[in-house]
Length: 123
Image (cartoon, rainbow, N blue to C red):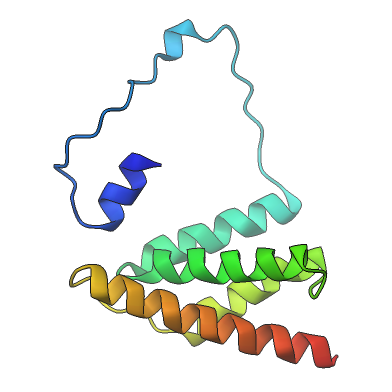
């Protein structure tokens, strides 16, 4: 996670002590076409990438809140993606201007995720 985190902080040139992936050392790789919930998850991630800015922070924060709420027994597993999708639609990403902009979008997304979860709990 060090590499993605360094990118999130806008530090693409940051030197991280991570081993290079050596694909030749792997004996077998299996690839499959994603379907169902996995495909839906990937589509949300691609949507987030296409929006740019703090959209990745919004995706991550809403997912963390939804998963935690599921663990607590307040949300059905099948609603996790619904929460993330709804938050991505409601919270507008901002350009990344440093860590404060990421933290602010994270906070907005968490607050919105809680609102969406409360709406789902009423149903």
